[in-house]
Length: 233
Image 1 (tube, helix red, strand yellow):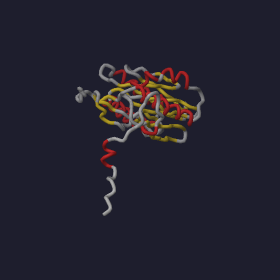
Image 2: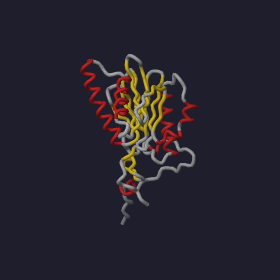
Image 3: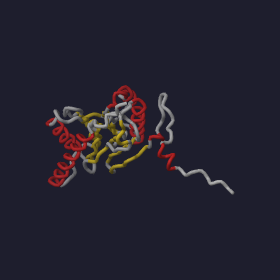
Image 4: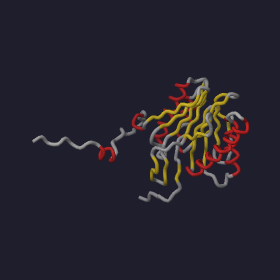
């Protein structure tokens, strides 16, 4: 089997952003692939841009990281000049400008989410090509193909924080069950007027769907486990 280890690192990915009554919840899986090889099973695809704005990254890992780095730098300058935090809309438009001006070279889709005192919680989807679309919820990455019908049925306005986070975790676990390029753990980021909360859901604690197999101990777990008790003389 050709693992194609020279292929560019791809996020594979399921990324989600959901608004609720008071803020936003962002979520993502953690699998980074190189061809058929899982290069990183616990990567963090939710990147901080400012104190109140985060971005979910999909597509080429390198492209999404360099866009995030540039935007973080520009927003830092923007905050110093204005003397107050940048809004979610400004952050999304900076990413849109970079993505559109370099659309022939970048292979990345992003979801920007955050909270500001002017408009509250906002989600913006920025797919390949550099369009920016404000949405009540946004899904992206290879796993999103399996989630459109689910979100049409499950999403509702004015959800509580707990309902929104449960929806995001359930959706990512559903995508992990179907999409071979999504996997690992589920990370969530909750952003509201009180600040930012990060949560972590291990892969072996997620609900199993369809005909998924129970998680098994890895070879490393077996090797690191304590050996048998010595025989009594």
